[in-house]
Every structure is written in C-alpha cells, then in structure tokens.
Image 1: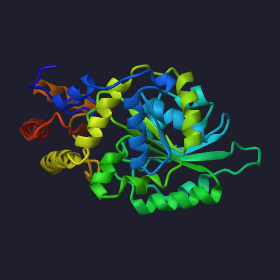
Image 2 (image 1 turned 90 degrees about the vertical axis):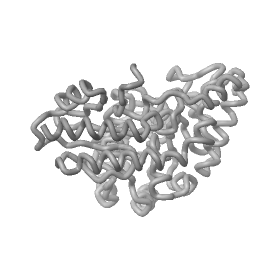
Image 3 (image 1 turned 60 degrees about the vertical axis):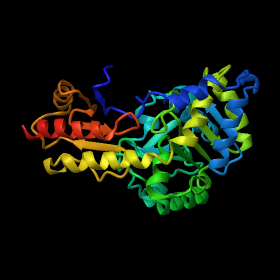
Image 4 (image 1 turned 30 degrees about the vertical axis):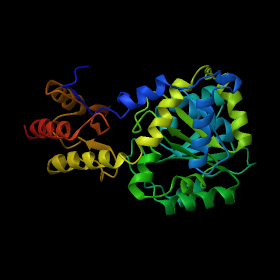
Length: 343
C-alpha cells in the first residue's frame, strides 16, 4: 500500500518500527513448546507481573487468547454471559461453541455502559433444567462501543456480582492499554478484578503479532494444553515475543498521542452529526443513519481521496488512529472526510 494512503481502518495495520525490528533480529530464541524460549518466557513473566497475576501465556492471536481463556473458566455445555457486540461472540467465528462447547447468552449492546444489575439478573444458577452460567466477559476498551472505557467502579461491581454468584469474570483486554492511559487506572488494579484476561500486543502497541492469556499459575498450565490443542504451539517464537517486549517498553505512554489524534478527527466531523458516541480513546465511531450516504459510499469516497475507513455495517463506520498515522495525516484525513460529509 502506498505510503501516501492514510489507513484509518484499524490499529492492526501498523508496521514494526526500526527499533522493534532490531529487537526482533537480536532476540535470543529456543523451542517454546518445550518452554525453552527465553524471550517468550521473559515476555510472559513481564505481562503477568504488570497485571498482578501469577502467569501468562503467549498466543499468536487475540481471538485464540480469548478462546483459551474462556475454556479455562467455562466447561463444555455451560454458559458465558457477555454483551451482544462483544468481540468474543461477534468476530471470533463461533469459536466458543465450536472449540469449547460453550453456550453464550448476551445482554443488549451498550458498549462500555454496562449495568451490573442487568448482568446479575441474567445469571442462571445450577439446577432448574437450565444451562448454568459459569463466567461473565467484558471488553476493555470496547471495540464496537467506539473504544469506550468501562469505569473502574462498574468493573468492581461486576466483580462483586461474579463473586456472589460464584462465577468467573473474564476481560477481553485487547485494548486495555488504552483504558489504562485514558483513565490512569494501574494495570495491576485492572488485573486484580479478573480471573482471566487476554491482552493484545498487535493493535495500539504496534507489534506485528501476539496476545497473552493472563491468570493463575494453575490456569496457565492448563492454557498451554488448550493452546497446543488449538494449533497455537510455536517454536522459536522469541522473534515475535521480542517485538512485544519492545512495545511494552516503548509504546504504552505514546497511546495518549493516538487519543489526541482521534479527538481531533472527532472534533472535525462532529458538526455533521455522525459521531456515534463520545470519543475516549483511539476509535472514532460513525453513525450514518441520518447521513445522506451509507457506510460503503463513505468508504468509497474516502478511498478515492486516499483515506481508508472501516465499514462495520450498512450505516456504521469507524476511524482508528495509531502510531503509523502522524499529525499531518490526521489533518489530511479530516479535510477529506469533511469535504465528503459536506457534499
């Protein structure tokens, strides 16, 4: 793709920086299936410590990390509760049912505005000839919720709900780094609230590959077996883990710059009435219900002007800022989008 194209489809499109590539090239490696890759082991220990948990497991993708975690907390033929727009039931191709035999039930999509009382009322206990609930999953930040950040108070109340019902609480933390930067909540404070987390290195942090499952030592030992069964056992994966370690060291604090760029885009297009929600992080959601053009038409017009936009539905689109989009690109994208929306 030409460098002149401004790619706002996702923060997964970033390319490794020169420093990250150097770290990858210099990585010490071994066979990770045998537990002998020192760079993978160091990454796992570092991420576990960041979230205050005993252990972590490196996985090639965020979807695999989520699905491993869900299998740790929900037995086959039991139930997971999450919201209707959650990544685990929207973008993971039915994996919870296909691989884990997990039944899913959802509350209405509200993004980060989760109501713990609604969730509590949905929990099904053992007995009554109904599928029992075993875990609740939330997403921080929320992808289809426009990068919204679930407040710490809400998460604490969900933890209380889960404890009272004796069910697990999982966090799809693909973009939890953004929540940490936006609200200033320490990663360990988030970690203390969840039985399992998945955290992604290949979105805002800019690594080319990789996510981790975080949990207790016992859970992560089981997770290694589940990962192998799902085809996720890797060999000299330290080359990839080195990129993740570099990202953790260099790319967390800079997420604030991506948030500022997203806010500038949001401010530019706000007068056209297409912002779906308040922009908190690096995602700018567009609701084109009342706009003269639909999402595909917007994306086509933007592409003609050198800007790539993600289409999430007939009248839903999204812009995502990231480390490969500089201030000049934000200005040019804003000019292109406002010209299209004004027409």
